[in-house]
Length: 190
Ligand code: IMP
Picture 1 (cartoon, rainbow, N blue to C red):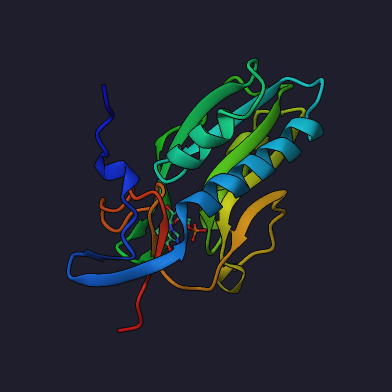
Picture 2: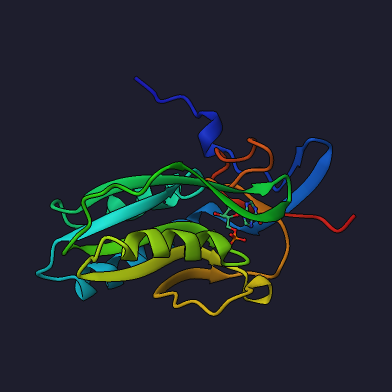
């Protein structure tokens, strides 16, 4: 018996999406190590407390899944889906496609985002969460672009700070493509 190598084991150094070139920014094993570190910090911070993870779709689906694989068995997971990016730019407007679950009152909520860019999406989601009077709210984001942030926001767990450049992979997309890549890729200067 043997196991065939599949596409998911391959980590190309460079990729092409819609005719644009991207190079590796953060390797897959570096992402996994950092996610495990964040999860261990979260486990210790929430020891003895029931945690609800709020995964912000679509981009955070992989980060949230990998994070949860290291968290306590009693962790609850809920979802919201918002949309603000068009192509490679923030539209500045947030469309709520799946509202935040209405069961957060009195709970300890951890909002899980793929990336905080201008901060518009996170601010919108936080307002929705606070409306339900949770016991506490914290934010975990895999990526943070400090140079793009428009409004100050409290980020409790940050995977990586990155330059203000467009990235894809590990859940993040360019017009629907790139989410399945295991590493993170940055658009090459054109
Ligand atoms: P913000 O509202 O400007 O902070 O943008 C947040 C959302 O825009 C993220 O949840 C992503 O879906 C998307 N986004 C921001 N920067 C990037 C990027 O570099 N690549 C792909 N999507 C991004």
